[in-house]
Amino acid sequence: MEPFLEAVLAGGLTGEVALFIAGVLLALLAVAAVPLHVLTWKGSATAFLFGVFFLLVGGYPYLLLMVLFVALGGIATRYRLAEKRWRKVAEGIEGERRAGNVLAHTIPGAAILLVALLPVWNPDATFVAFVYTAALAFGAADTYASEIGVLSPRPVNILGGGEVPPGTDGGITLLGEVAAFAGGFFLVLLGGLGFQLFDGVPGLKFLSWVLLATLAGWVGCQFDSVLGATLERHDILGKNGVNMLAMFGTLALAFAIWSVV
Image (tube, rainbow, N blue to C red):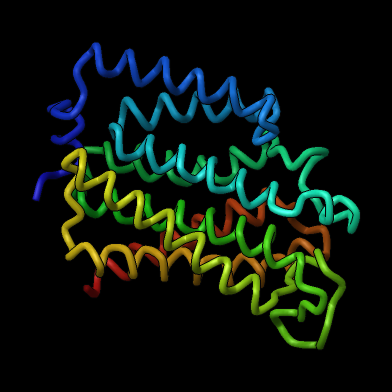
């Protein structure tokens, strides 16, 4: 196993030409995300800057996970968008995500990479990859729970109290819970393959890596619903603040899982 800081300093995965090509492709993706109504211009610019950070610090697998998260989120957001707009539960005007949403789902991942660079901690690179993957699994799970679950006619309050209107903070549905697990699972599966392809080396057996990271993301999604039913519904925190807090909670859960497996 290789400490994260040493892996970064070695720069073993990325040559200068390859980095340049990856940066150009990232810029093209960021520009394309706007006319495709995946991100606003500000959201796209924010995603590009964080993408460069993940590429330079973590390497290709970290950037790949972020791109997959944005892409999968865009697919879920645009699924039956006309119906969601008619119900007034759609994200943005055409389903696009704003800069605040991008920040809420990228700052926690960036924070774990920055902390991992501190020589006073110097964690194993495989651990950093796992908790980062779990954090983005939460992001995918939360997006799919919201965008797919909102189409169910009878959500219930996660803290009890019976049915609530679709789109209510803290409302959950069976469809949404299944979609959350599926969204997180698909992201972790593709991301895990990316780590193996680029020699990021998940230290666990591949199936364990996928299931445990997916589980952490799905549990984090439940935490997000609890925060929505309490802090967000009572205007203590906004949606983006709840998302960021829940993602940090997912990081803590992934840390705990790693400690016992």
